[in-house]
Image (cartoon, rainbow, N blue to C red):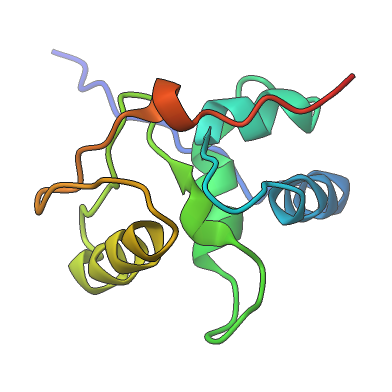
Length: 116
């Protein structure tokens, strides 16, 4: 019986990383985007996980509003990084976005809709 191993994508190309950072920088206070939305806007619609990789590699204290990017199902992902999830929830609450203690939120009510 052949085992099926999940194949993880490699590191994103440098232009992808630059595009992700430029897009996330534009998300206004009180608005949210999903990882998939950022990937699509960057021109790589099949790479939402890699958006997460880019954001998780940001230096501590960055001014980029990484906390405004959430899961497409409307929650703050915490798998393997609960301390980051607490930080993200706190930042979102500070911006007036209601988030329960498990990280659930109303993505559609706060979805960022960039122009053109």
